[in-house]
Image (cartoon, rainbow, N blue to C red; front, side, top):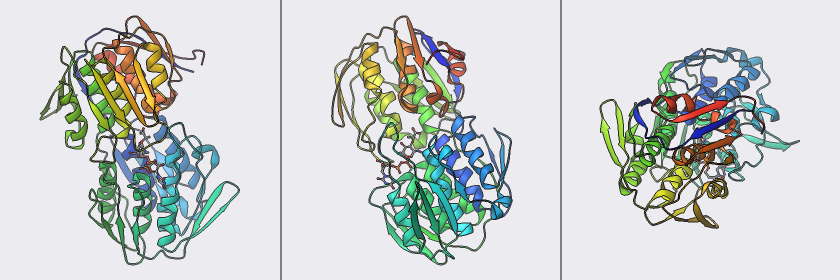
Length: 421
Ligand code: EPZ
């Protein structure tokens, strides 16, 4: 198992290119199942989650080629098992997003029910409620859920919460239903909008993506397309905090600033200078950070996927900050590890009270989930001495060779392969 070792204290300076978005790539890979021919995606990030999704698609009967440029040919799915097996779903919950396109295009899908994960229970009841409203029969047995329908029929679906995966899954099913579907209280994330753009290019009729109400007029067939995936706002936000806390100056090439308003607003509140430039986003760290209070919310609110990283900034600020997590019930797993490095954080339910001006000293820490591992890398960048992060396979799910890219802008960071866990 790999580990990452950081010697803290370097100011980060220079340019970093932001790569394609993981949370767009995964549903887009699933959308290729809807096409009657091959689909090619460009700027695909080289991440273990993307590889897992490609493996799943191959298991369904797709031909998958390439990596940065990825071509998915779904022709073989017709005669395939239309099943997402437990072994893959347990490693990556996003595997459930094959259900909508399989149901929409082939009238059947069998998917292992995803168990809980480190950050929360994460049920899929809203996905299934949406499929049922479109006329699908749902059957659960032996840890699997089967959805079946001769031809889905358009319906009005009101989600109990603005679920990203639920909106994407049901949108893909409804794209080939008979008649019109209206999704209410839909998720508005840029990755939902990106999926609607791709489905539109494939021939789907979708209006309102990015707003709480999405209207989908079903069509009989969709084509394969060629599409460049949008840059990753969460990766860009993570690097922005790296510049902010090291007193650095980074130009984040291709950073999707228009998708990052809530994060940029909080950075500016903390005294960080952020400047949108033609090539991307420039971020300049101040001599002293100011405290911030934030509440995670669905887009356009402050993203939960930036909560852990922003907590590191708060621990270094002059004064007290309060962070409230409202999306996932167990997303403070990074707190004990940050305290091991020297932070002063008190958690009460979904509220973390952070006393600032932490003086981090390096130590061995354990990554528990993707964004928690990113926050440990950030803390390691400012810690005195050596920080060793174990279980970095979590990091590789969402950041491509982060250590090489941070080293390019001055960080003293290395990966060691085959270290003890
Ligand atoms: C997506 O997860 C992202 N994953 C997550 O990013 C992100 O944290 C999350 O959206 C919220 O922004 C991908 O895009 C692959 P949800 P998803 O459905 O779709 C509850 C990362 O770090 N809920 O919007 O699973 C759920 O339990 C990952 O990159 C139900 O109760 O999130 C949660 O509390 C982590 N029933 C809330 O809604 C449902 O049927 C939001 O979940 C669906 C969701």
